[in-house]
Amino acid sequence: MKKIISILLMAVFYIVGTGFSNETKIDPAQMKKQAEIVLKKQILAESAWAMQQTPITVTASSSPRSAGGKHDFFSEADYFWPDPKNPEGPYINRDGLTNPDNFLVHRKAMVRFSKIIGALASAYKITGDDKYVKQAVKHFQAWFVNSETLMNPNLLFAQAIKGKFTGRNYGIIDTIHLMEVAQGAFIMQKSKAFDTATFNGVKKWFADYTLWLNTSKPGIQEKTVKNNHATCWAMQVASFARLCNDENMLDSLRTSFKTILLPNQMGVDGSFPLEMARTKPYGYSIFNLDAMTMLCQILSTPTDKLWKFKTADGKSIEKGIAYLYPFVADKNKWTLPPDVMYWENWPVAQPFLLFGAVEYNQQNWFTVWEKLDHKPQVEEVIRNLPIRNPLIWL
Image (cartoon, rainbow, N blue to C red; front, side):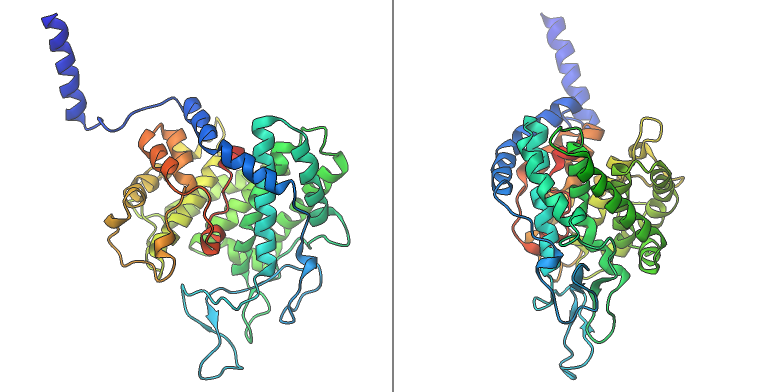
């Protein structure tokens, strides 16, 4: 008995001494199952709502300030306002401060579309019920197939600025909300309720849009921006390319992650200096880390696992999560000034916490994700949280 007690005491001293007493490990499969338990009630409630929704596409509304046509997505840059010195003249920039009077109806319609498909795909994944697919098909047809209601596969008129630009490359970030639409189609494609003609129409639309993102002037500009815009360009192209089985594009994105995005955007401590320099450093750091994490989740393969990739100077997605995690677990530890807007609304149930927890077997990251808000209502938070249905990505 004394020998057993001695062994137990030695084990306790070892655990405390190595600092892992709070790092409880759990099997990744169990963690995924626990995530489903956490989200199931919400998924069923949201899918019940989605079952009652009729399609609303960009053709349902328009703005006289749009230079595009009926089928063209239009939005206005968030941080641009009327000039007090010249009220009728070109808008001026107020970084981080959202102008509530800008035209955002198309963006809201796209977010709604994303919510509907995300909810239906999640419910289908956990129940296998084809009724969710039948409902989703109506929305896929409206947005991508029906000639009367479809959206043109480009973003020439996104984030326009009155008096300056009819559209800008920065507006391409608006279609991050099509990621869960593409992933929903990917999840539901084997259902008998998803007819071949509609599925092929969806894939053709995303293939056409991916081509535009890679060949148009705005698309190329956005791809080469140095901050979260380039990350989000890659993140959405990755999700679209996977749906379309575009292996060449996926390989190109893996290379870009390892040679451009991660090494150029991350500091050696795991932070994102370009995001930290903004007027909303906390929210933008979270946003960019979510996007980097999703690139790892989408692009990793058994033979090319981005989760395990490290640069020569030690930068990695694991280091990025480890850097930001303490500030998400306890925002009071944040050392920079608070964001100029929406400071009180972050964090929510950030994707990087869940996917990082599963990949690196970190129970504490999962526990924080579990406790945070899984159904944010603030529009600005939703705008910067394209992954709101994580089960369809696991």
